[in-house]
Image (cartoon, rainbow, N blue to C red; front, side):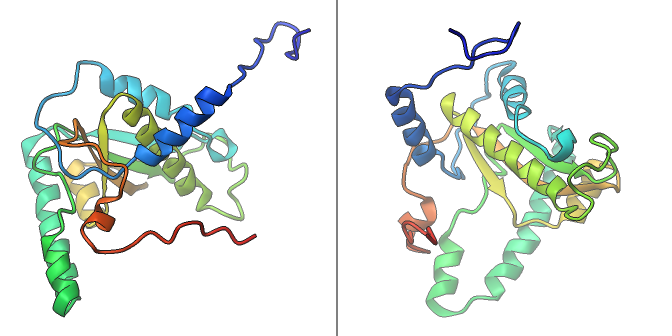
Amino acid sequence: MSEAGPGAEAPPRFDEAFAAQFKTLLAWRRDVRRFRRDALPEGLVETLLDQAELAPSVGYSQPWRWLRVTAPEQRAAVQASFARCNAAALADYEGERARLYAGLKLAGLQEAPEQLAVFCDHGTQQGHGLGRRTMPEMLDYSVVAAITQLWLAARVQGVGLGWVSILEPDAVREALGAPSSWKLIAYLCLGWPQEAQDVPELVRAGWERSRGSLRGW
């Protein structure tokens, strides 16, 4: 007998093989910085965003706003912001740590064929404030959940995603002409990765090591 209610579709059952594949997907979801310049197939970005928008959001507010950045002058402004922030960050380190930082590739802004600026619309009325009156940051967290879902959906298709955080949020928002009520949550690079790795690049570069399980129970 179906467990679903009248007129409802029965929920899927995920077997052990699927569970194993899902665990593999989580392990191979990496922050990609090294992209091929080949264009992604027509319509693939839209398909990935459709899947990302199945993510949960506080009060069903769906506050994510995706801006596809294609204009050369806008991309140049983002690259200039990255260059300023990256230089400032390097100046904060000394010795061996500075040498390691200088050798890191921290963005694929020049190579990635697709780039998305992801904002949270703090002025949205959708959801009528449910669940965020005492914790307004839940709007931002909802956008992060959608980005995580996009990351996994992209990896399923063999597409790499890199999250660039070494940027000036207000400068990027202004360069892209986004409304003042929108907060930049992420700037994402998407494209075919030069290589696939299940070990984080920062671990391979010697910047940091994995701490393993961090469970507190």
